[in-house]
Image 1 (spheres, rainbow, N blue to C red):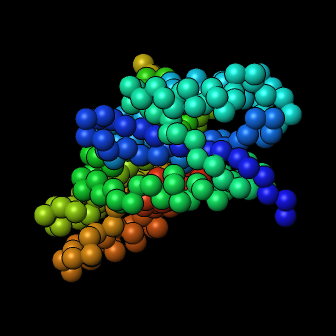
Image 2: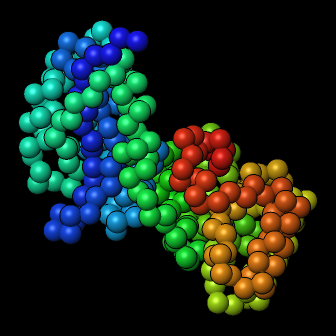
Length: 288
């Protein structure tokens, strides 16, 4: 195989420069007169793991992609005249912002794509070696909202509802999010099995599952966007959850097992938060 000399730069997010903590959110590799490749972390929502916000990254990412891709799609034979190793090196020397570019590092590879494929699992995907543990249902719901907003470009009040109430006859139940794409809704609710009161959690799950069962029989209605919305009985419903901790009580494990049975019975797709965060294509999991 014919190896050539390339350089790569890591793109990192530093929410608090004084603390010096960072997460690598992307990597670019290439060489002057040769090919270039770019790859981002699977989700910029990972930025919240250090207390930051993916909103700080989004504008920078879009700006960088305009430079990288130019007006002609991915940079192969046609590339932006601005993208050079010198331009990236100058960008690297500007270290005042929360999004930073590291100094260039040489690498021998058959192509820039091969270089990216080699480095990404080690330096980007594996840079966050502390697994997030949200602990509370509210925090998981916040993660979900960021995924809908930043991965699927949905907007609250336009095609996304927060804490919507589904009504079946005189019965009501609440979801964390209702996403509407092409007029069709997708309902999502978060669950955390890290509470001190498993009996209360079980009652909440039983109540929610009962109402979901009614939706599966008769459909439902929901107020949103200034009107009443119809929810079909086959509406996609997702339960995003974190499993009980390893040292969880037998009672909590029992509640978790009962919840999974109820989700399966009511055709609710159960997804762990880690699965969702680590997925290369979240649309395959939450059907948006």
